[in-house]
Amino acid sequence: MPHTGPMLGLSLLLLIQGAFSFAPQSLMPSKHHPHIAGCPVRDGSRASAAAARRGLRSSLPCHSRVSMAGMDGGEGAVKLSRKDVLQGAAMLPLLGLVQLTPSEASAAEGSKGKGSDSAASFEVRSLTKADLDAFSSLSDSVGWEDTKFDIEFLLSRKDTESFGAFSADKKLVSMATVSLMDASQQADASDLGWLSYVATDKDYRRKGLARRVCKEALKWIDAKNPSLPIGLFGEIVQASPLYEELGWKNVGKTVRWTTRVDPKSLLRSDSSVQRAENGKLEVPAFVDRISVGSTTAVLSRGKELQELVRNADRRAFGGDRSDALKAWAKPYTDLCWIVKDVNQKKVQAIFDKFSSKAQGTSSERVISFEGFKALSKKTEGVDVTQKQFEGFCAKAGADSATGMSIESLLLLYSIGGNDIDTDYAKVTGEAAPSSPSGLRGYILGRATTQNGFVLGPLWAKDQECATTLLLAAVRGGSVIAMSNDREGDVSFELMTPEFGVGDKVQTLQSKAQVLKSLGFKKGGDSRFMVRSGDQKSFYRGESDNVYAVSSYEFG
Image (cartoon, rainbow, N blue to C red; front, top):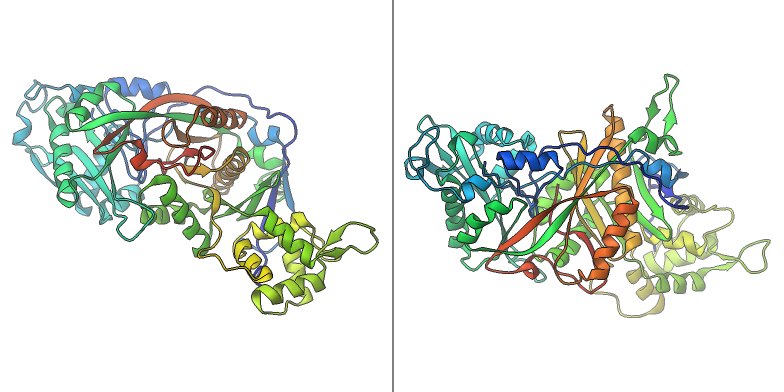
């Protein structure tokens, strides 16, 4: 049964009634940011700039870019209408991880331009933290505007190597990064690689520099595993010849979805937000759970829940990017949510065993203090106090004077620290499961420098779960924006794969239906390319109904 302990923070109940109300605004350009395995590819050329203005992007798994050119204790419910949640939504392009330059893809070495020497005359070496400023400068020059945290994390990763080409005056003019996702310690994952952060200074293109740094990156990773599947996402078709020459093949595509929301409009009807005398909205530090229908998403905080995310990600993604997910989740907890896979039949069985008729009613059944005490004794071996019971009721949105309904018990098992499979085994005497219950879905995200957020990976088993997770992340991003006194609308982006096991036509239509209903608008397509493998090397669907909205990109 649920562990005794402090109450969780405020719960957010999203009451979804009627159709969503969404007024799209004009598309705004945004800069690309690196991701972890499963990130976008971009192009720094003029063609890429035009694509960016149209809202086009590309993406790759972790850290990918290619550019050639308190919960303080409390109780209560937060209510939002669809109109309030999504009013003012519009589009914004997704942050990319990999950027490709079409001019370099088809370049003939030795072409005229600034520094007309050949690629062989440039020094190529591994990049270190000492090259942080140079890396940042080249990244900025192609429009990525990566944060210092992004680049430091990239250059400090032991499983990642970046290579750069330097001109005679020691300027970094071209670079490429390759990541190895070592899954040797995980039985449910495979080793995978990812190419990203391929970029070339505009004054040094058409010299074969991108080809050279990419070859150095491949040499490094091939020395570790010559048959390793290596992926990349890229939206610039003209760049494909370079990657095809180096062994990549096109295996599918991804689609970018973007929206914009007004945080003040969203939070104004949020009962956890108070209005100060000066008219400003006072936003609480945390709202720890959000419900849509029978589905409840909770913040992915604590080792237990984060481990559930990493386990689920390995099964969906195919590789092990646990370290990267852990690093990115830490600074953006408001964007990281999960939905636990709670077996409702088992919850019903436990409820039937420990519930009784509510006082003053002829048929309604609830779990009273005595019933909850017996349940806790059976599952945890401890006696709960009346005060502790009141705390659990507050978590589950129940009145302790009346008792817990079946809906309240289900909600209690949806939050951290409570595992229905384990409790059911103790209550029925069945064999205990080998591992705790898994997840029905999860979402992560990160902030950008352009007053927006990149969402992903996002994985869910069904529409309601995906909807709940997206709303939770949008609400979380709005809280971050308000807490930081940001003005104006906030943008949200994510990429959806349209390939792989489980991505049947019906599933693809389901994805579009959910995203459109939430105010997201479809943007540009990206190409998914793989070397020494195929899409199934990177994308695993456990069944045909797996709703993998965004398996790779991680913002």
